[in-house]
Length: 174
Image (cartoon, rainbow, N blue to C red; front, side):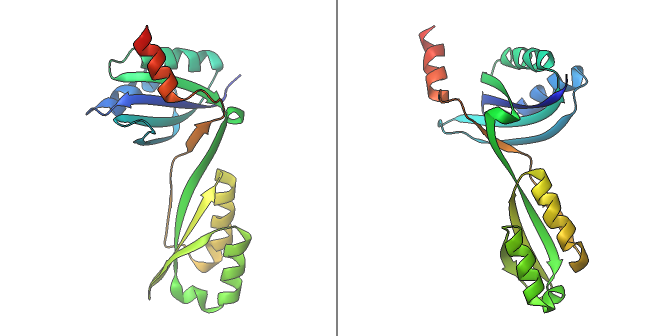
């Protein structure tokens, strides 16, 4: 049965690495729902978090293929229940629509969002949470007129306690 899997890939920082990783998904006809890349807790090691809908067998095969790439240090796959995850969204609405400030503040507070900046022509609001929470604020802001909306990919941290440094030490001892 297909479900969402969070694939965490730890690599060296090299040109074209993201392309080589995504080709593994493309060859298997697996659509990537979201992807983020950043530095990890280990100096010089970068992390890709990829979310894709697939079977567990497909997840195992994808992980195996990605681990064969030279610059890849370690790859893990987890279900949603095995990770803590969030996304971030920014909403730009016209400042003039905030004339009834009480209603706007009420909506922002109710959705646990915050105002990042207020300019003469626009206001930018930030919200972190799960996709349905971001969509909920989007729907609440539609009457104010959304000028722009952008959402990040998922970032996730696994619940298992073994650290990346432990895995790297184990690899160097083998």
